[in-house]
Length: 114
View 1: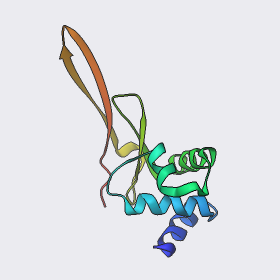
View 2 (view 1 turned 30 degrees about the vertical axis):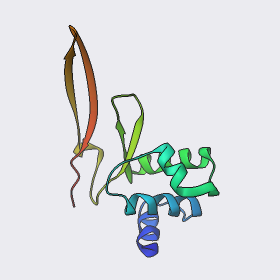
View 3 (view 1 turned 90 degrees about the vertical axis):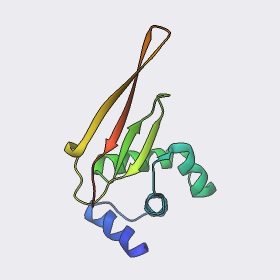
View 4 (view 1 turned 135 degrees about the horizontal axis):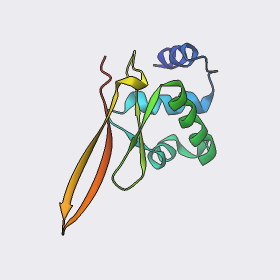
């Protein structure tokens, strides 16, 4: 897996650092999306919150991962599959009615398949 991580980082013109490697490894081992707090917890005390945040932002900018907004206004992050671009993402609105109020929820559906 280490070689796969190095290739992915180099393909996206990123230097291979401990934080990038560890965080990318977490995504490769995960089947679903991760919250920032999950990533902090799973990466251990090795990296501070700012390092994790900057790494996630870099991965989003490079198209390695996606952000997924949740109903409670938090953000989840998920690994993008090969040949995935921003144009492959679709946002779907789910509207729930409760006590005459309409509450919108938006989730980004990842349509990037291998």
